[in-house]
Image (cartoon, rainbow over all chains, first blue to last red; front, side, top):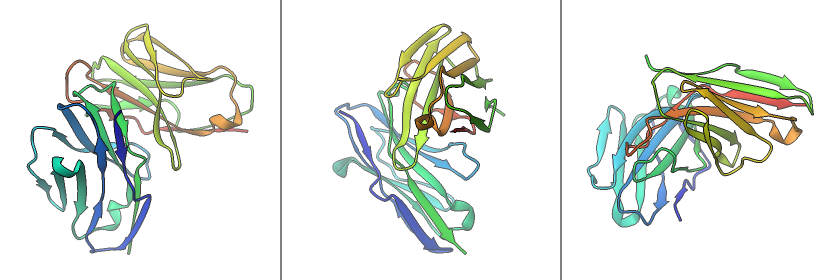
Length: 115
Length: 114
């Protein structure tokens, strides 16, 4: 069975600190995609990144970086020099074989960036 | 700019009322989804549709029905609203097929049932 675990329910950090959001997944498929979505207070989930199971390269986009490690079934997300605008709920998700009707979401991590 | 639009951001209904939540996407996507989001429970799939007039039950379909008469529009119906259906409802669309699984979400409809 597929599963996505975000063990951190809620995190608070002071602005400019770095913060890492953890995501651990389980799947029997060899082909899968991993996602991170951001849900700001406005409510809409916004896509941040997608990785496929064959590409373990880490990715950096500005202050955001993602560390994908198949050996530990983890896909962690780090925000460097956090800002108040980063305050949101972040969801990690797993798609079986790239099918959007087979997506499993984690329960989300609520991130508070304190000024 | 591609978009998923949900008709109502906030609704307040009474127990027993019939509730319609509308969702429209402009990306010509095959698949459309209705999720429910509750604190501590994350996103749970209610129903999805992979074609006009086609629907599949998700994880929590009880108490809900859906309608997809046109490709771009997917409606969620609560035949007789109950207080335990107070929640945030999120509509999403996806390309379907053997794509990458990325979903595009609307802004959500926060429903309160009194």
